[in-house]
Image 1 (cartoon, one colour):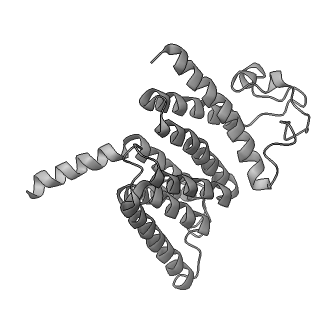
Image 2 (tube, helix red, strand yellow):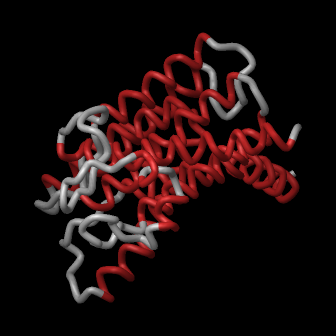
Length: 264
C-alpha cells in the first residue's frame, strides 16, 4: 500500500472525526447537524475555516476558543485522533473494498453513541437505526468479512440479545422495582446481535457486563454514591464492540481450540 493512501486515510479520519464531534454535540439537543455552521458552544461565534481544521486548529489555539478563550473540551481532539487511527488501521487492513465502507460508517456511529450516552444517558434511535440498516444490508452483499454473519446466526444473535436483556429489564422493573437498563441499550444490543451474530453478541454481552460491573462499581464507590445511581452502559457496549471487531473472532477461535484440546 502506498504511503499516499495511508495519509489519505488519516486525513479522511480527521475530517470524519470533526463531523462526529458536531453530531455528538447536536444530536442530543435535537439540532440540525448541517446548519448553522460550526460555532463556539459558549460564545456562539461562527468559526472561520482556519479555526475549524481538525486537530491542527485545536493545537494552534492551545485548546481555547479564539474569541471568548473558553476551554475547548478535550473530547474534540480525542475523537478526531481516534477516528484517524481507526481509519488508518482499517484502511491498512482491508484496503479499498466493501468491508472498508462498513467500518468507515461504523466507527463514527460507535464513537457518537459512546460519548452521547456517557454525557446524556441516551442512545439516539437514529444511530441505532443506522447500525440496523448495515446489519440488514450485509445479507445482500457478498464477500464481507465473516464477522458480519449470515441470516441464521444473525437472527440467533438478535434473539439472544433481545431475550436476555429484555428479561433483565423486566426482572429489575417488576422484581427489584428499579430500572436495570434502558431501552436504548436493549435496542443497541439487538442490532449488534444481528450485525455480528451469536458468537459476536455473546462476546459483547460478557465483556460489557464484566467491564461495566467492575468499572461502574469503582466509579460509584469512588464518588460516594450507591448502586441505585444511574450510570451509562452504552460506553461499555461500544468498547466491547470495538474490541470484538479488532480481536474478537481470533480470541473465539483460540478459546474453541483450547476447549477442544481439553475435552477431546
